[in-house]
Image 1: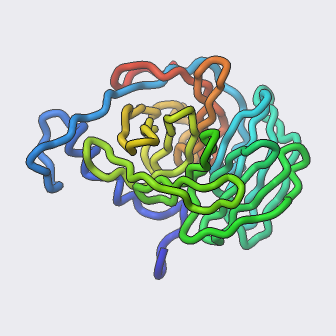
Image 2: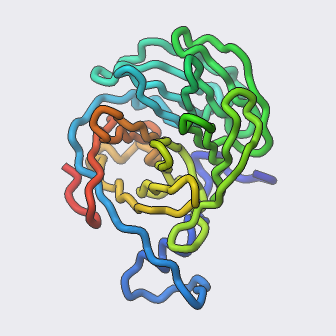
Length: 277
């Protein structure tokens, strides 16, 4: 960001797209410009909570993945950023490596025996050994780093825009990109990512929805309502929804947020907003 822009945790939400207002509102007028032919809205989904796990409320969650029953988490904020291995059931941090104070940790992906961690404005992707959490090397890239996942062939990266960039997992070289569209309109503020085959799940920064994206076309194929997870008493002190990890054994998702007290194991169900528990 140029000029005196607020920090990542403070920036105003201004570009979630008119499509959320235009295409998802029923029978409502819009102040946004409409095209002559409007693309259909994606189907609405909701979450059912299956199980609740403890989460470190000091963790400013930026990236999340599940491997062999353990959570691997990237946390942000300058001076507090880390990469860590966490016992899912207890929430205990088993191992952690701290980033230098100049780094603001972001998205996290696993490629083989390596973890690759983005940084927000440092233009560096840090590479860690998955077993020891010792830094091995780093890659450079232009622009900001937000979310990251690995689809088995490419690293998929977000930068806070409506763009997903595909990168070589060995060199981090850019090998393609796709623009994400919700009901025909750009969906910006794409944040933490989780790859599942040709599907990418994406948090949308400062929004309580998760977008399910066709990575080949960029089309949002499902709009998942993830609101209402926190009890009212837990909202104070918590920041935004952020963090998605797929549980391959069940197809459930693990979701959490920055400074949240819990990680939620959830089932994604058809239907508009409803009871989550």
